Length: 304
Image 1 (cartoon, rainbow, N blue to C red):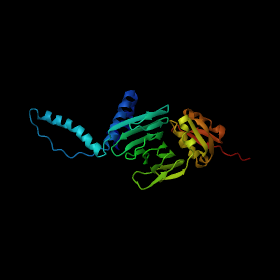
Image 2: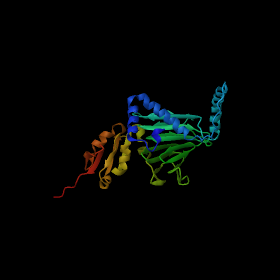
Image 3: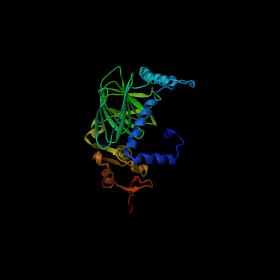
């Protein structure tokens, strides 16, 4: 609860980070609590309860027993009101691509360093892609839509195949089969677009209405074979795709450097080598800023 407070101090944050680093079990316990926290956000606030009157005897035990019996009923009521899922699962991948079968029978392939949760509500199947990238093959169920939340927006389908890529607040949805509805901002549900196979929608906090364009499925899904394809992209467009695989992001030294074009096919498990080799394929030089991030700058032009 304290971590979610706005006035959390630097000292408290440091103490928390030290606790996480002290034992791998601490990280697992914290992630479990975050799952509970995420589900509890959907619960309605309870009505005020009058202060109990102290009585001797077995009445306190009876009250406790009644409260325990009420919990399953509350859970059932929450399910009927579409507030509480009947199943909730958390998945993650780190150094390998992971294949997952969700509780509804849908299949998901998780890219490296990705996280998602699945919650089955009465009115919808809800996935939250917390970070990374995933390819979905959704089990068709017209009466039970499949919703993927990514960034500030979401993708809504009943059964289809599509890819969702995220980096920070940027999201890109590529459709390979069926149809999907893409919303760039859940607080503006009318600002949405529909995709057909071979189309792509992109959005970020500054792009409330998703930008639709033609897609290259081979490029978008190359990560499933451990590849990153950069097809004649500017560095400004390529860096988010590159940084997805790095612990420390690569930054542009200036806007002019971002206009340089890059292409090629690279190993997603060795993107560091791609960054180190940039001066061999582009007229750029690498340096470090005060934060230790790699900075790319175009080499100054020689004038005789």
